[in-house]
Length: 219
Image (cartoon, rainbow, N blue to C red; front, side):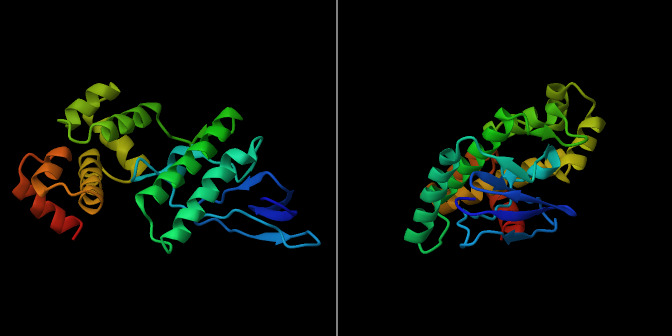
């Protein structure tokens, strides 16, 4: 909220919020806000599918507060302004620059929540899963297997599969395949690399197999 006063719905209750407050409604929640100012309120607004590392539902891993009082609103205002400027310049096409500013915005928001002690693990979230998801993202082309994931998480293969399915809705091998294909899609869209190079960078040693899987899953 930049200027003005709003009455914001938080579940069945309502709370007054003014400049510097950030409102984040989780997916599928009831959302409403009412202007209580004598003049129109000025807001920064954005709608995100908050996906951590591309495919993981952020709200499954963390309890995100609906309301947060920003101690440094400027830290969020700057990427908001840059994101809006880029979208306007590109006629709302989502460019790599726009995606970058969106990531900066979300990152600063999460950092503010963490610094305030307001970012908490969701019930059932596992620190080992968070760590292994980051490792996968950092090395999508690596020789990952269910056995390697189990060794890294110090769990049985059955337990690893259970944790993945509960947290991200997919078994680990399927999750890794989709992340590799999503990365390949981005490289095809945003670079001039050939299919064979992209396949290798995304963990597919056989370009023909990569092509078949990509077209079957991505189209």
